[in-house]
Image 1: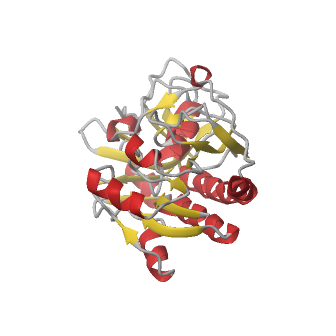
Image 2: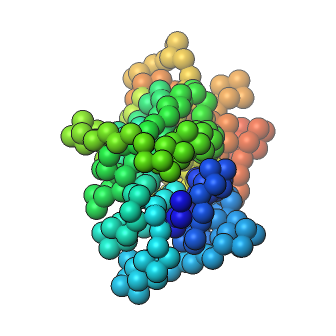
Length: 309
């Protein structure tokens, strides 16, 4: 089977590896140039293609008539999209005789759209997974070929969960690609009315509301900690405080009369009150740098009683 692949990030590498194991010919790879403003903590699809002697392209507008014509000239029997960041339009999707497939990082129809690994943590889900589905004009709405579930551990961060999903994606493809090649793969219609859709995350989505329960704050923190931009709030003087790690604390002895956001230092531990419970800070950052251990305790000991916003 001859394919054209649209891929980026570690999930892109997982998908390309699965195609290689299945013996699927890759006529060309389409990917993105890395954004210099983005922390690139992931592997390079472009480098993978170059190492393997596969033509690789990074067009700004892959759906332009010129690129559609060039892809058509490759005569692909199948298209695969593995975390490619642009929607492929009908002109491209109609080209392959054997189907156009996308690997999505959730159990569709739940968490259609962007950033599913972050959103499932923000929402406190207990499990997620990966789905291979047919691509259609609407995002993540095509018929499902197969899925693999992944449990979410209590201490999973977005990057830890993402790595699990990459492994699951490779395993899912290993099982499904032979069936795609023989035309015997399942095709299960989605009922997107029973699912959910989430858009891309904005910087403002990382703001902590201290009126939330401690558990919800913890879920936000672990969803956007390194290598993502981090959850944040502000000190009374306007200083931005990024919280890289913190955990919810039991509420024994908790005084709900004390307002959310109040900083407390007890026996060397830095805590912030929330709408329900407290959050124990262990790793935070201001413009003066990152703080853990003694430095964190000294910084907040001078600010105990203040209310973060």
